[in-house]
Length: 434
Ligand code: FES
Ligand SMILES: [Fe+2]
Image (cartoon, rainbow, N blue to C red; front, side, top):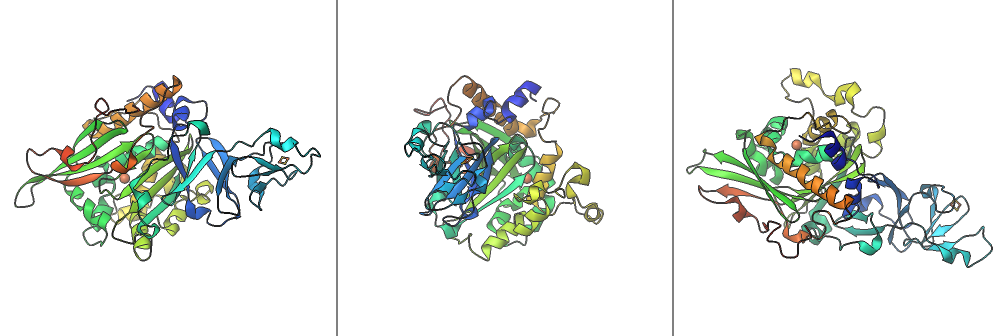
């Protein structure tokens, strides 16, 4: 449970809010590289933590991220022309380079005028099939964390983005909440018996125990969260452990060790939901594996369009919302379907959105099943309080390549920490940022 004030503290992400200040210390994914594939293509609108940017790829392929509104008199650069190594505002023709320097001001006779100022340019990088932006002061930007999926070939990586109309936290809570898997996702997990997908096989055992034992342990980057399920079906009883690291402020790695989640706030009431699967052996980014994986979890284009989870359909009047019961299929439920939603992603999105745009946590009743949720609130509160006091929030400098999820079978007496390469509590982590 959180007081209303603390709930506001960790949910609000605008430039003046404490959590918004915290978010401005990290590199955040804002789009897929494939959403802006060509030099000089149409500029791309990005809203992140309540701030509107225009992202463009110049003639040489370099990416730029500028404040959306032209620094002259505020016309949107989304209307601009991307040409000859810059973006030109169509109102009075001022032209800007990717770093914000002013290249031309054709309505001003003095040629030196343009050298006196710059447009607001954000730090921007491209890695792992994603475009990353740092909203804070570029001079203070930490190095871009080296996530494990950056290092595999493009063909072995599958990045995808969906839009969900609720606060970032209530969607993110779902991925540190192992106990909902065997209930909300019953149908998907049962379907895994026949499915020829790694993800499917690895989650198969979860359907047998709906009440796992849960533990969480703080680290310098956030915390590790583990779900422990007793498995007595083999010759020797074992405990199945599924370990997921939460990395501040909005990243979670799946216990299968091959899936990165990011929850980038668009604003207080909308979130970009990124998945990146990667594999050393398989070409997940190519057909047929690509389509198989995306359809299995409900992230294929057709399902995303129908359920209002693309950038375009998430703002359509037909999108899932309270008035249409989030497009739940009651006929399917009468025929025996448990949730009336087709897939994992739509189930997660529906329960998250159903709490309201920003869920009131002052009335919730946390249980033993919510160990990681409580830990998540504490970590975010710590970051918000630190940022409000002008300090660095949790885990700004992390060695991301060493962090990953893990799962495995433990014999009696074995410790789950033996399954993970990185388990340094903050007090022991030398030089940890917090
Ligand atoms: S408003 Fe952009 S050039 Fe004048
Ligand atoms: Fe879920």
